Image 1 (spheres, helix red, strand yellow):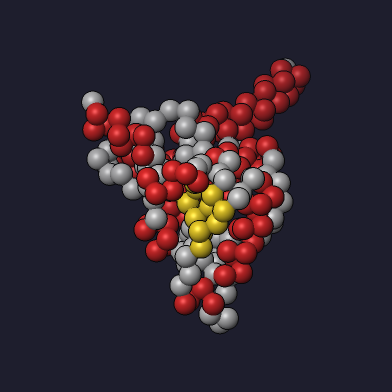
Image 2 (image 1 turned 90 degrees about the vertical axis):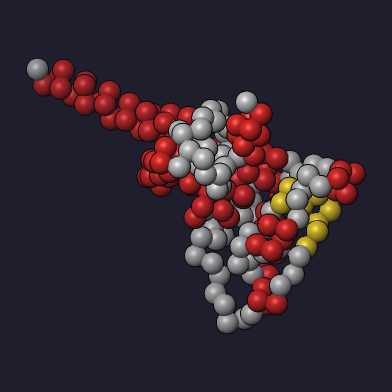
Length: 196
């Protein structure tokens, strides 16, 4: 009886994190894997909302850009990497993040050169980027940037972590409650929805 209990306990101990990782992989709250995109289930990528620096740092090596667009939210919202004037410099990746500081920009650029073959950088500057009194943003992970991104970074952060499970739940909840909302979603879902 005790052996059977220990056996079942070991199976449950192994199966629980594997199931959690599988759910995070399917729901994909960070939009990195793009396994399934279902309106009402996971079109709202809630993991991106509060972890944009993490998501972009992990997405960058997957996109393999040759041209980077960097800066603050003005640049993020204002420069489309798919604009026809940038076609000669593709692939282009918009690596701008809101409230970016100049020191963070330098670290993100080092991260990009470590993980991609970047040839060009379009840099948008704002005055507040140079404010010495502003501290580094809380969601900036300086342990991730400036080094090669490996499989453990993806697995540990986006699949097998408590925040990945929480963000998966929030993604499903928001997507179900607001199926017509398109905040933090992948553009291919939006296009498919309006093409149908």
